[in-house]
Image (cartoon, rainbow, N blue to C red; front, side, top):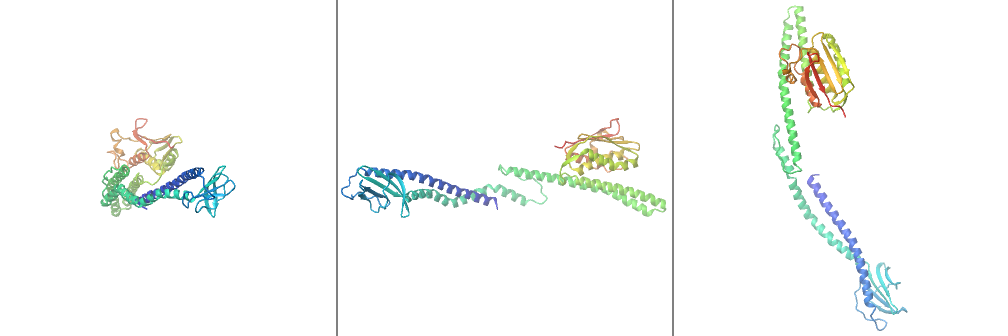
Length: 426
């Protein structure tokens, strides 16, 4: 159901209910007031007749109409006066009383005097009719006004919803590729929605630009390893001796390994995109993640003759995405192992919410420490295999988790020390 129709039905229903309630309250109030007025009127009529002195058994008094019944008796019970059309009401004990005669209720006032008894009565329907008439005089204008209110509400609500219609029309007229902001609305109720839509369009624009840049960079970086694979394959085909074929196959295997690692890192970066990640943040034991990654990379460390050491591992719970945190620690350890020469050492430490990975490799010059966090950037003159994505992935995960990332020299003045400080889980 549309907002306009909902508001129309709600407001008209409220108006009708209000009219009914007002009419009911008026009926009760008027009925109560009518009881007092009619009782007072009956008493005044009886008092005005007490000094009359009718001659004979029946006196000719002014007739009050068929709605009233007036009777007079002597102390002996002889009728002095009976109004035309008077009901056969019993002689009351005195004062006010309500009696029923032939299915009709009567309100009776009896005035007893030494010389006569005066009884004045009126049917109860007179009171009810007057109260009902007053209530209807309130309800009928409300019922008559409902259609007029309906038209007025329809027009006013339509005018109030016009800004929403304009926004919908502006969106409908846009080209599919247009991400320009919508015009700001001056209506206080619509302005927040317009701001949120513009913020969404801005985030979408940034996400699309990031994906385009990433796709262009990935295509550029994949071109070199694919070319290298083609060259290595040609060398295998042209190998003249078994020894040359084995060397060519070994070189091809290395090229395939490097290409596979590059593709794996590209896929990792795509999965870690904050706008595309569907994994929710949960409490994660950072020390357990570090221990798992160290165990996974122990064979590679042994093969390179690098000591992979677990330093202090304090239990620490951070709030994050488990797969993303594994990728962060994995890339830090992998990067350290690749750049640490044989006989070197890589130390992995967790102190509360602080993660540290320190190596004894060549380190990174201070002027290059900010640049190496960019995608596909490598320090000039670097001889280790890599694609320039490891630290970029680390920075992306750190930013998504609100963590602080810093690069510095190792404790001995050589190598690289990477610190990542997370927020503790609530």
